[in-house]
Structures are given as C-alpha cells and as structure tokens.
Length: 233
Image (cartoon, rainbow, N blue to C red; front, side, top):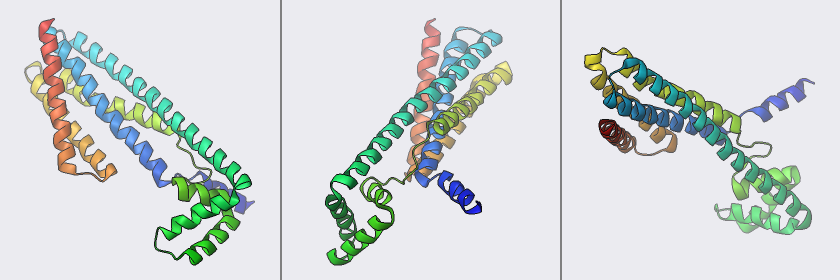
C-alpha cells in the first residue's frame, strides 16, 4: 500500500514543462493585468477628476481582465491537452500495428545523438520492453506518459497574476495624493512591467535587458495612447 501511495505521488508531481507552462501563464497574466488596467485608468482619469469614478473603472477592468485571461488560458491549455492525448492514443495504436516502425523511430533518436546503430537498436529493444508507450512519446514528442498540461493550473495562475498585476497601477492612481497620482502611476507601471519583463526573459532563457526595455516601451506607449483617448472625451 505504501508503495502504491509513493507511485501515486510521483505520478502527480508536475514535470518541468508543466511548471514552466503555469509560470508562463502567470507572467503573461500579470503583464496584461498591468497594461489593461493602466490603460483604462489613464483614459478615465484624463476625462474626469472624480476619484470614485476612476477607482470603479479601474477595479471593473481589473476583474474583467483577470477572468478574461483565466478563461483564455483555460481554453488554450485545454486544446493543448486534447492534442497531447490524441498523440498518445495514436502512438498506442501504432505500437499495436507498426511496432517495427516505432522501434526504428526510437533507434533513429539515439543514432542522431551519436550512438551506433547496433547499440541504439539494443537500447530501443530494452526501452520498448520496459515501457513502450512512454518511450515512444518521449523520443518523438518530448512528452511524459500520464502527464498532460493542466488547464486549471494555468487558468488559476493567470487569474491571480492578472489581478495582482492590475493592483499596482490601480493602487497608485487611487491612493496616491491627487497631485502625485500621475507620476506615481507611471512609476508603478514602469517598475511592474520591468519585473514581468525580467521574469519572462528568465523563463524563456532570453535577454533580460531587452525584455525589460521592450516591456517598458510598450507600457509607456499604452499610457500615452489611452491618455490621448481620454483627452478626446
């Protein structure tokens, strides 16, 4: 019984790809939360000085953005999960109808990595004997058996991060003294999008400086556009 419980826990443990997908959803959600909320805040604040109106507009957009991002992530990752399941089902059928072809795919995988054809064939035989389906989906698609992308994790990460990201500009615009609300909000946006740029670069092994600069530029452009829209009202 203890062995079964241990195996169950091991099976439930997220893979690196699953964790990265959840983190990606969180970072993107935070970035969108920041930019959409500040966009609404700048549009409304440029058109009216009523603090309550500004607050309600920002809060409404924050909630709408959070749930929109969550539903989008859920739909997107659900589609990815369905695709992964379809691939696994197809490979399971191929193992029954074309075992030789599947063995060749595994052999070619190891040959491409510098193993001799003879040794690669022996490795393929052993791996297919131990776990045929797990081996095939790993070498052909980089998947791990019984592990699929979880849409609920992505949706929850996006929901929480979008709401959390939107709080920064909302707090700055509505809590800071009126004389300082504009510079405080601009500063809050620049700092927060710099952080999301840094995190996205780290997750994607990209250039941190470029990602941060790119996010700041997009944030500034977003504020300018929405301020201009508010001035037209």
